[in-house]
Length: 533
Image (cartoon, rainbow, N blue to C red; front, side, top):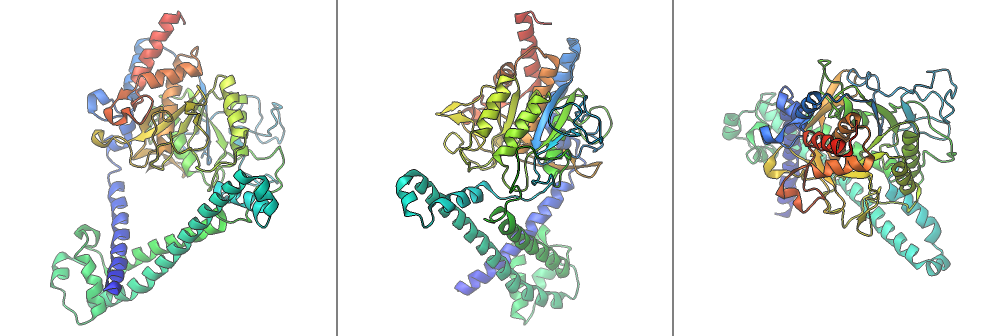
């Protein structure tokens, strides 16, 4: 019985894998839906969908004859496809730098930084994609200090305790990846001969419910394989051949194995360090980098062009919002030095808003990022950051860069964003982190349509990584039209003008989703109160 359960569970997992791929195809088939592509702009009062209400905000600004000033948003991310059709005209251009002359014309320390800077490079300035996780780096650092060093354990008991925690987490993760590979290989070796037997029986025919229900065979392998098809949704296998189903399954298993191998080769490799020997001055001017999907999608959400008849539109509301590319995030955990340098670069070169759609659960206690946050605050720069996708209460579990110190927000010019869905009955995205003290607001973060690499390509993605730029775009919309406000003002306005919902009441500061129409109304009110023009 145990063997049969194992056998059927392997086959069931095969069915589940294929069901996921079908679901992805079905979602993609809905791409033509205008509502789905543009739901992040929705007006809650009119539609019941918690979007950011962009069109109504733009209409209000036009009615009040508010003219925007250009505003620069620094996108600290994986890279930006700066020549994308919906981004090329809204990329920040360094006005004091001459392209490709290999000189630091503006004397800011960066050569040919036309659209920004790339900090994800090795010591020779060569871009890289893969990196380790912070867990790996910290375990490696602590292991060098405490392994086979009894004196260090006695001298620094807290450090030794931290070392043991890191060691446990690191090796439990390694074990999980090894098990993933073992299970994937077991699935393949068990399922493949059964599907082959079934393929012989059907001889290339497509499956139908009638054929499955009436199937008779003396081959126990074929019968065992077919049993699963009676236990999973018909749409997941009907009108497909066994060869097609097998090919899809093999592709999924190969993907699982490749992912596990890649993680072991880079993310959890104790001897891998692409920044070894890095000096104080490093990087290059390639803001696209080697892995720019994430940053390109984020940039479109903030500032993709309006009125050009292409793709989609950013929540910033117009071409006065400019994107500065600051590559700080590899395929792995971002390094504190890169983040801190990225913040300072963006601030020093005119960015008023920074979007940071990244985070990690392990930190090296470096003051670099904290100091950079305070530097941004001192220069009246707003930081908008993602709350994270761990489904955790980040009042209790720290996500880095930090939001709270002793239960209170660390920076009054940083706004942390959770993700909401377009379903008002299940408003918080199931993956989104939350926190009554740590998460300020929510923004659209599921099924978000935006720019992706490929010059003229667009696609869907989800995460608090999408919610953060949706809110950053709103901040840019407000601040560009009311430039005499401060970063603290903008944060306060966004928090105070949300569309509230009881589902978010106890899991965020504001208890609601950002609304740009209400935000510009509030900004107009403040301008009148302060007699600003």
